[in-house]
Length: 199
Image (tube, rainbow, N blue to C red; front, side):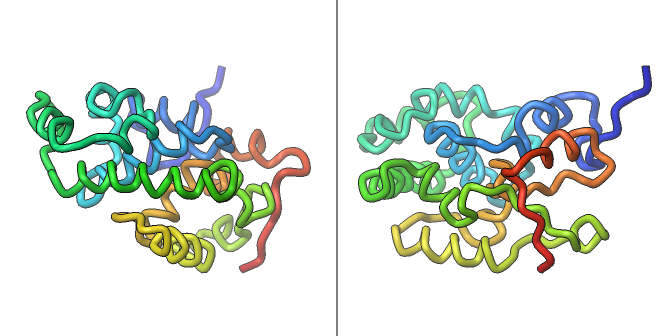
């Protein structure tokens, strides 16, 4: 049986490949999972995504299984406990940002019913495929991520600039950036939930 062709960035035969095959770019419709990915994006700032995957279970332990409602209630005692957890990334600024973002996340849920529906509303529930990406013209951010990052900033979110937001949109399947010859590409572009974009 021939080996599957995958996006080049994930071919480590291990954790990154498993993440690519099971999560990355698959349309995500769950608030807690959305928050988990956003929290990891905050912690990743200046570090590698591979490290985030390695630290994921420590994050899960420190942040109550990524329960944003519980995280929003954290105070100094919880921050101190997180900082003292073995293997944790000891950035107090990032930890405080995660807690702050949980409160902002809840504000969006209160106003829009769910964070997931608010975020997918930017594409009317469609996964976007940019034709120029298929031709090798990749980008780290675009007009969509600029707009969402600006709106998140209005809600008070921290550590979520346009480049970080673009990465989240890729992970959550809102932007399908699987390479054209990747085995996941045809699987994720079937049906009416994909929209091809020229820009």
